[in-house]
Length: 349
Image (tube, rainbow, N blue to C red; front, side, top):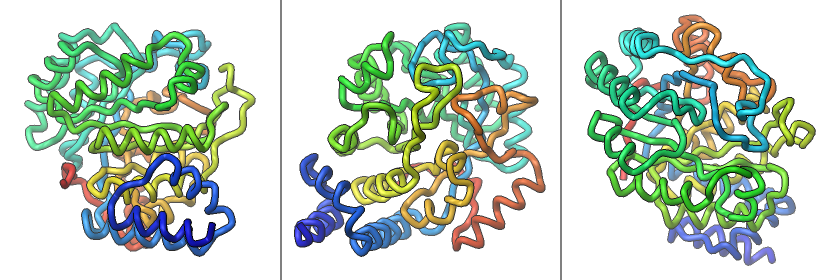
């Protein structure tokens, strides 16, 4: 077993390959091998430095609607939730993007629930408007499942990136989390996005009800197959009023291990330190950067939108246009030995 752990890590580092069987053995064996865990983190750190240096890229996050037609069992925005809903107008979104561009941001992430009010035409108009106001900025969409025709229209309008977490590559687990959604459609969307030339983001939760180490191994195998440009990995956090409200939160340690493994599997990947992870452990940033994370998403949603976009309890975020909060963030990044960057931060392959 001891030699196996070392051999698996050596193979992962040298070949960027991890079989599902080895992934299960490795992830489950780390609890008894702190020396291998530290070697994993050091290898991930070296890989991150070789690919992206010490840069930590900032993305200005605009959560523009918390309406959602889906009823995912874990999500605080699910259609049946009794929460205060909001939508930003196109003018509000463009004004906020313009202010953030003037502040220095060169990437915006537009995120919402599955909200059909924002039709293809409205999204296209928003993307074009941002590109006109902020010509050097990258536009990332995170607005759920769409048709191929929608994706093509968004791409032609100037959208550069699209985030669509697969959440669980195990169909059994996926179906248990998303009772009214199609596993095949979600995975198909990710492949369509890649084919249309988007910088494509996938990702999954850690520690959600029913998840096994074998499920996590399937997620890692899917990432090796898809070769996404971005991967969001965060712990499950319960949201009051949902079917999973009483379930325990996911593990910080397991999430960090999976970030490190993902950095080694996909050296080029843009790897966010997710809001969920920071919400669970506010002091995790330095460790997260050390194991391979290189993206942060300060919240630039105007008004109280960021507080109303309540995916889970006790959400923590940095106000991305608040000079004092941003100075504090930069100081923390620099104290950890990294460099805050507001550049576009495109994927490096």
